[in-house]
Image (cartoon, rainbow, N blue to C red; front, side, top):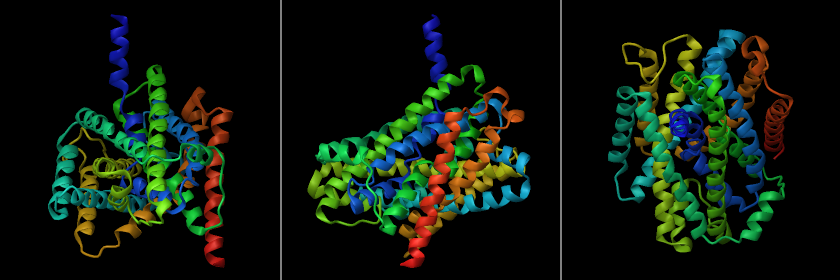
Length: 408
């Protein structure tokens, strides 16, 4: 009986950490990994190891704040740093997330067309489906749907094995860093970090944990979930890079988006691998289109002191629901306009996330080390070292890229 209750408790607490980490691999992220593999082969694989360590540390830190304070990250930033810096951060994140949402609907359009559906039908239908799900459903229902849909991400692992890579070469590039002065290489390195440890996921994770009401007594379960989710999401990223490096880079095929990778796989890895890649992209795009606007609505409302939450209605939380609706509608309109610069928006959103992440992490680090807020649950030295190294590395990479672009 006791064991049954323990299992029931674990299942009840699962959700925020796993969903946040897995759906981090949305269409924008998949595009970044696909382009990285096709453009530079296996040579960017090594970035996933330090990125995974940093992801686990950052996610645990954010989740701990949500459990201890019962508040969202933007709420804490507004209370402790004031309205002005909070406003400008929210503005930058809004546009970055708009680009990410557009990227997700672009991924949905491209993947569904590969599966024989018209984008002018598939995209509005998908948008309407997720809008109804969020505005009319409950947190518990949405969480269960998202957890079930995460299973489809394993299609990328299947595609990776079907591509038949040189595993010795893969292992070498995974554990031995390779450095390149090409500005595109540096930009993709920043984009990999920026699309793996995204600003929006920090806000969404803390808000969802606060809304779910997880307490410090049961936090060890959420902590374990974060470790598993972060590890799995980067294993999937690993296989996306491996697949594209094996099948596209080896034959000099350049791509600009993930759907091109799915199409290009056919001659080298077979129809099944191509289909798995396309279905997984459609799934990731839909999930990303749910979560990214949701995260935006959460942190904007928290920053402004407005009511927020999936369990609320248009009457209870009008700003929350209208921000979510506006992001969905704007993104769909951009996708359906012929000639829209979709690839540019995808890459720009990942790059902007990489630029914004240090600012988000600095705010989070100051907050999580404040004993008035966190009490005895402040960061230990190891967590602070990893988090600050992440911030410093991003700043150095970004400055290097800017200097190289100026001198070029």
